[in-house]
Image (cartoon, rainbow, N blue to C red; front, side, top):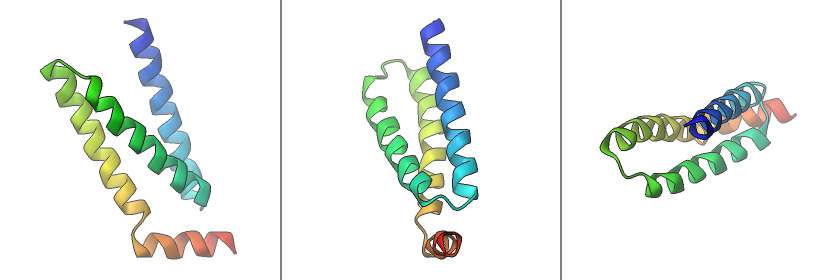
Length: 84
């Protein structure tokens, strides 16, 4: 139980760090956020209980919406402006 709690808190901290970096125009953070979303997708495979799957799907859908926003054309313009 403590391992799951620690892992969950670490993931929340990582996502918050990525959100801050993305907000500052870090193109690398956009890529890393996409990789983290891919890992979250793979993590869904190991879930067996309905309750865990429900919460994991809510988190996954939130991540999907965030990654979609990161790769929209308007977002590309934001990252280009931040780079130079």
